[in-house]
Image (tube, rainbow, N blue to C red):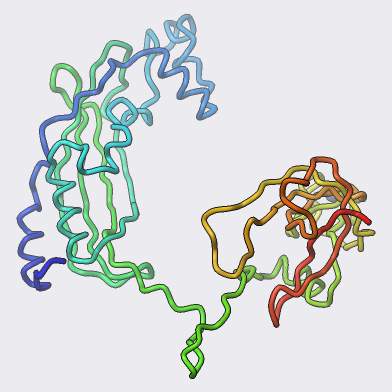
Length: 323
Ligand SMILES: [Zn+2]
């Protein structure tokens, strides 16, 4: 859309360096014990100085304090951050919009550091200002070419004194073009799309090799006998890395299921029944259910293994109602 040359764009970008993105953002709530308690529960932080008034009073803090890492939570804005139309005009959104117009449409956060000057206490009211500290030259990265944008937030209390800071770096980039799945045939007919391929590595290669032979194997711990799936290096029960495999009978029941209608990925037929199958031997695996109308699938339904060729190269273990 934009007719800016790279030089013109970079001249525009320079104008944003050192600029404050907008007026200070004031925390909607003062620091309070309810939010502190929720945060500590979510993070599993059991330090009594955050939630136990008596213990906190006996501590060096002489009362409840907020976890320092919660600093940004006090001022963090909601979903409007993702919607420039709903967000007050702000130099940061403006900068991102400019880069989007020039084709750098994607963004990924790459780095964040925080520093804390003092503990926040209930009743403190935090505000923050954001400065665009620097914008890199155009860089080539694994994700695509783009610009790193560094911002610095300063957090202040109700007296205007600094309580902490945060630096944040994002890469605003032009994503690589998605490679076509396969080149069109010479006649111009598009090739039939195929299912996504599994990612095969050291720990699961043996399992996929068996599948290619039309064999379903289930990993079994040599030390404690526990079955596990998907394949992985270590037993979750006893941490042994010695394992063998069994060949299950191929019978089981539907433990849980869902029917996919949308979005439709090329190479799959919809509606697609995805089910968690509980094998009679005792472990579970995710598969597709075939030979059964989606409306007829029931939890607890007896099913049996059937291998199907999904294209000219790949077969997969599916399940169908037991005959
Ligand atoms: Zn084990």
